[in-house]
Image 1 (spheres, rainbow, N blue to C red):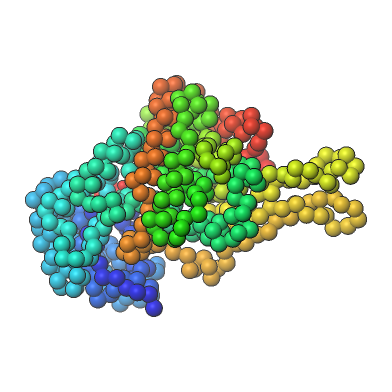
Image 2 (image 1 turned 180 degrees about the vertical axis):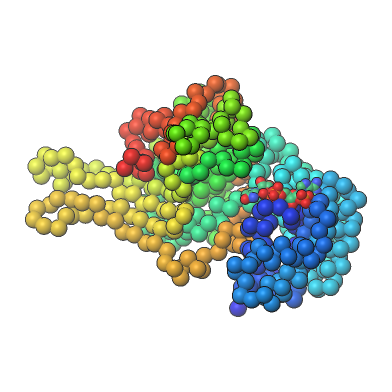
Length: 493
Ligand SMILES: NC(=O)c1ccc[n+]([C@@H]2O[C@H](COP(=O)([O-])OP(=O)(O)OC[C@H]3O[C@@H](n4cnc5c(N)ncnc54)[C@H](OP(=O)(O)O)[C@@H]3O)[C@@H](O)[C@H]2O)c1
């Protein structure tokens, strides 16, 4: 049986979309699995809306409808939920919140363990954190106080630093859990297992054997209803600075001395510190942006609802990242993300070098039949690992053919895989920050992204420049072809 932890949650943004779609179902799963102590758990949800506890519990029950075993179970869970109408910009409201938290803490004998979750627009993060401290909402009787905050963490280095300083007035760095839900994905966590659990893999995880690494976060849809936010952000901020950088740090890091959060984070930070920050000219050379056009049925980005028809926001980014260290010298990490691409998937392709001498071609001086070995980690929507090797074609002679070793997550594994939010909330309850982004990681990623952003804000783009259903602009292919390489996943294949 799992060890259950006592906890009082205080959720800001309890009436919002994320809470309903992700947070309540995740907390419910933890409750069902016994990770949350049934007798010693309560959640205060807040929003400006004038909801009663019953209305709130009804919303919570609706959100867990599909996963509850019975009405009684859903009701028992929802009975731990309490609502307070609260405007986070009104300091006086926090006094009532503090009193209510103390009351529920005593009622459920929670011993002062508090998790504050801010699921609101980022401009409120600092205000909430400040008032929680000033109005004594943090416990001081030996329990823990942890703050979980949603993305985005700033929109550039300066705003991120300002936010971090604001949070730092109320919470220490080790109390802050910055959500990056990619870190909660099974295959992203599996990178550590595959690398550091297998000398076979880790032994060749370097520039002697690896030619290049490719990370693709591809979306099939356009901006949908997020246009209002997205047009002010763009793909660089929305996908590269956070999720992609996090995956890169795990791919590039050295082996930590243990699996403890401080040790894993230390190595991720070291990897990011060795990442080369481009000059503006290098950024122009090594990064490509795109914006989708129309293709008959699909309107172009500039004609989506809530998008200005002269928008220069990028819906696509591809780039080359370099790590200046012994392990990765001369190994480019190519990254790309975009909307309206061929399909929805996230994958990592580790492309290995070909043998220095091809004895199969040498026999009759024919062209090499050898492909690069590729280890592909499929992160989404399926969890799959494929190792592409060269093998012999059955029959006479020595004709080669591709030989793929594939591991696909089976139904049992799928059922055992928690949703990212479930896993991350559980980690926060346990005080394990491994799968959250630390300030050093976030700030370094902003340093990297800011140079590119600055260049793109200065130069005029030639948009639109890619067709919906493709894998992005031609310039993204050129980025690799000029290095004598190509994307492993290519829609034309
Ligand atoms: N939705 C997603 O899929 C998703 C995915 C990843 C990250 N996120 C991040 O998660 C956060 C929340 O997103 P969301 O989609 O849930 O937003 P949302 O649906 O717009 O919800 C915003 C919440 O903030 C509350 N709120 C707004 N102003 C307030 C105020 N002055 N005082 C108190 N409460 C206030 C709203 O409650 P009232 O209206 O009742 O005041 C509502 O509960 C954002 O940081 C977002 O970037 C969301």
